[in-house]
Each structure stands twice: as C-alpha cells, then as structure tokens.
Image (cartoon, rainbow, N blue to C red):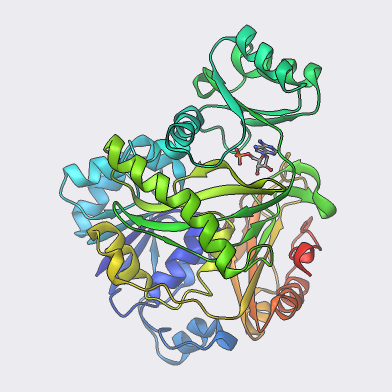
Length: 448
Ligand code: AMP
C-alpha cells in the first residue's frame, strides 16, 4: 500500500515509524516531514522486540531498503497535497495535525475518490470550535465544567463574575494552543475577555469564547479511535504542558508524556470512557456527524468525578510518541478499519511495558529561539535498549542534522515499568547535545 502521512512533528514521526513497520506498507511519503522521518525504512521492523525499538536502523544497514521520502509540501497546502496524492496514486493518506482537518482535507480527498484517514470538516469541529464542543457536551450529557459561550463581552464578564473570576477563558477557534487563558480573579477574567473579544488578539478564532469554571484535579489525556459507529479507548497518558519542572513556566505544546498513568485502574478507565463515549456516539448519530479518526478528550479528574475540558480531533503530540511504541496492532490495519467502519472486528492490544517521552526543545521555547544548531549523539542514544528518538523540529543541512523549530526531539523509551522507562529515556537524553537544549527533568514524576 502506498501511504502518505501529512505533518512534520514528533507525532508524525511516530505515525510514520509505526506505519512503516506494517507489511502492508510498500512505499511511503511524508509532507513535509523532518530529518528523522527521512531516515525511516519501510517494512522491516514488524517483529521488533521492545528492547530494540530502533532496530529499524540496524537492519537497514544490513539490508538496504526503501526509505520514507519527505516531500516539501506544507501540511496546509491542500491543492498541492491533492495533486501529489493523485500523481503518486496514494492508497491511504494519514493526517497528523489539526489544521488540515479543519480546512477540510478529508472532504477534498474523498470528493476526489482518495482514501484518507481523519475526521471530515464537520467532525473536526470538535477541535476547531470550542463553542461547538461545549454546546455538544451539554446537549448530550457529557461530563464537563460549568460553562457559558459568548460573543458579547458584557454578558461574558457577567458570567465570569458568577464564578468569582476563577475560570478558563477560551477562544472558540484554533489558536496554536495559545487560546486558553486561565484566570484567578475577576480582574484577570475581564482582561482575558477583552483580549479575545474586544482587542481580537486571536483574530477570527476569537469572535466567540467559552468560559469554563476553573477545575482542580489531575489532568490526563484519553484517546479513542473511531469509525463512525464504534469508538475504542486507548490506555491513559499524561502530558506535561508547562515549560519548567514542577509545572512552572509558560504553556507549551507539551514537554513530555508517559503511559499508562496510575490515576485510573482498568475498571475506572472503562467507566470514564463509557461516560464520555456513549453519549458522544449517540450525539454524533443524532447530529449526522460521521467521525473517523482519533477523538482525544483532555480530562480533569476532579474530586466530583472526571470532566472533559476540551476535545481534540487527532492524535496528541507528544501522546502519540508514548502510545505507538506500546501498540501491538498493525497501524495500517487499524487506520484502515477506522476508515472502513470495521473497528468492531479489531481488538486493540497493548504491550504491558510503560513508555516515557522526554521532549528536548530549543533554548527559549516557547518564546523566541534560534534555529540551525547541530545535534550530536543521536546514534548513541538510539543504540540504548528500548529507546526510540522521534524527531520534530529537525532538518538535514550539509549532511548534519540541525534544529529547525521549538520542540526538537521526543526521546522515548519503553521499560518494564514507569521507573525503568523513565531511566532509559533520561539516559538517552544525556547522550544528545545541541546548543541551548532545554528539557524537563520530571517527566513521569507525578506517577512515581
Ligand atoms: P484546553 O486547550 O481547553 O485543554 O486548555 C489548555 C489547558 O488549560 C488544559 O490543558 C488545562 O491545563 C487548562 N484548562 C483548560 N480548561 C480548564 C478548566 N476549566 N479548569 C482548569 N484548567 C483548565
């Protein structure tokens, strides 16, 4: 099968790495991809043991084979992506990021009779519109925070006042993960409302807002793969959003993850999953939403029970980097079943090992940072047992892999338990160097 993956981050590297292990994959492309994706070999690693996650490269040396090809087309350039998929006769396109989904890439490819995995534009609204999601959750009884949706700043401020100003003010649309402002009092809430609705700091994404009561608890990520009728839950994972140890510093795209978390046992996870997915599937059926892809709810485990803070409509980054090394199923078969509506025939199988992903970022991230710093030690890190280094912002320049973004690498390890996975991931991080490299030293700590 000829496969095209869209995107260029650590999530897409993990998707490419796992898809490339499938015997179904014959040729693969990634648009635009990164330096790590361009090193992945196709169809060689289907029997890798957990202790040789990076065996792909060793085998490639022994037996030269086809590599994944990166093509220089932006993930948002829908006409060029379509033309490329038609020219190469791509048989399955896999969409990583949220933007192309919100722009309607799935609708466009389907109209042109191309097979593509991901939610269509209507279904992607669960992520592209927080107002849509909040209204949907309330209509179908999905546990969520007390909330209101507004386009008028006076009404918004009145509602925030009823919460004593302790709230999360959220721009409706996609805002590069920056559209959520957490407020501790009325002054902050009023300022946040003015920033989004009056000063229009997020442009059209902020023409409406959701205000949720501020919830306290443990935050976890859930993922469910869906095919329009069936939704199958993944194990839990936990992201670390803040830039600095101890959840200090600015919000980022995610500085590291681990899976599973100890906060829900299997029975509790099933209960939480059912409480969200049953009404969600019923709502989708009633509203004529045909969701094929990943539903990724962000959950707060509060003392009054779990609450959905938001829905995403794609794999998490860096959650994907800890999920896919644990997934035993063939990912091509799984995504194919999600497109076809045959997920009910597939049982998800997970390795019992734990996984940890430590993100190495550019100095200054999530603020300003420099690019073009040479990265050393990648090969040494990859030789460690159980370790896989997923690339995000990297590029090959004059034969040297250099930094090319904010988040650079997702250094991932499997271990017999969380502690072993964490030690292995940090041992690999220690082998890797680039000027200004910044990472958190406490990924997984909350669970230990
Ligand atoms: P979201 O994109 O809606 O998940 O929000 C980004 C982050 O803001 C979440 O990961 C939470 O840490 C925080 N957050 C969002 N909503 C709330 C809420 N109602 N109460 C407390 N924290 C929140």
